[in-house]
Amino acid sequence: MHDAISVEDLHRPAVALANEGFVTDGRSAASNKGMPTVRIVSETVPCECSLKEDAEAGIRSAMAQIVEALTKPLSAEEREPKRKDKGTPTRIVFKGQMEEFDRFFYKRGWGDGLPLRPPTEAAVREMLAGTDLPPEHVVGKIVPRNGKATVEKIAVNAVMAGALPTHMPILIACAEALADPRAHLGAYGTSTGSWMPFWIINGPVRDDARVNCSSGAMNPGDIANAAIGRTMGLIVKNVGGARKAIEDMGVYGNPGKYSCVAGENEEMSPWEPLHVEQGFARDDSAVTLFFPNCYSQIWQYGSDDKGILATLIYNLSPGRSGLTCLLMTPTQAKTLAQKGWTKQMIRKYVYEYGRVPAYRHPSFYDGGGWTGRNPETVPPNATDAAAIVPSPEHIRILVLGGPGAFMGLACGGGLPGGQFVTKKINLPSGWSKLVAKYKSLVPAYERY
Image (cartoon, rainbow, N blue to C red; front, side, top):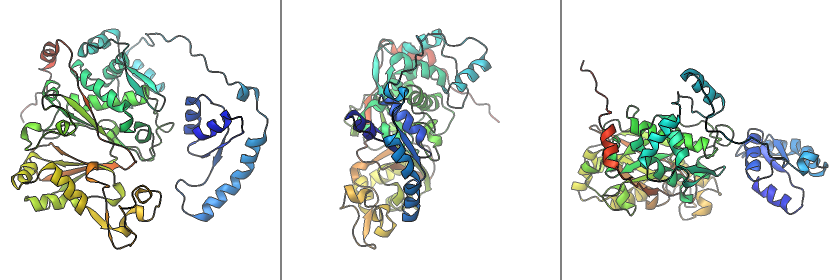
């Protein structure tokens, strides 16, 4: 779409081809680039088509439309497209009962399918107690529509998601991570691949905000783990403009987009925590973001170091190469550490031995995949070993969870250039007082 607009800017007629399921997405992209009336031809060639006859049939059916789009005179609207005047935004958009509020917001596409809390002036003001930044401060621009993530907009979405003011410093750092080009939100947030943001929280803020790092860390049931991820999902949609089936074209979608948040169990880990690996001090608080699209739990093959490592390398999927996070319990981590394994050694081992015969690797069939960018990754012979993960730098290790014999893999971030992005969490003045205010907000389960 951007190429078609660039050609039009050179005063040459251009037409964009879009699969029939992506025309709305194309219109949004064109509007975002200031040319909402660029001509788009809807074509029927199946996505990623590798059948010549299907491709040729789709091309033949589209040719007449392409010729017409290139030669038909421009309409008045196409010559001078007019921006719709939405008027001056107001701070109060709705008054009414809770059910009416929820339906009002949902019908305007501002929700995520779950009930929302109303972002009243008082509630937003209380949320802003979690930061010293002014409400109008722009934390970053969120793609695809480059919406300005101001501190106040973050607070509004946080209230809607049920977050607490003690989550606000984390949410600001999360927004900084989303806006970082290294995170590749523009690709992962709108791709057909249905990637989910995985938020990993380190440092003292875990205890202050009550982020679960132990049993069920990736379960629902903890306000911090649930509401932080949900808030960021609302921000991606409401500020960034990635709406389902319009800009976010995930084929199947991903339940992890509701929330995938976990803290590292640093106190029970024998190794340096993730944020220290990423260049921060141990007493810093930080959040790390990457985009997997798959999460697996695997029963360990054995409780010794050989069994644990075998579990990891033999459960890597050749179809899910890219950024990979190895999840292990404190017990498994301690077993490996006692045998002399460091995080760096494990990453190298998983890269070196996590291989499949080349004929099982998608890049063996796809010259535009890792073969084209990293020809050394996939050998030319079908039976030679091919690396599943492109390099040890694509791998991180996270120690979390409670007692048990399961291990985890979060993987699938295979787009080129994506990285694990870590941002420092800056706490406001009066933080201790704010933490004390919400410290008692914990579930008290009845004994059966």
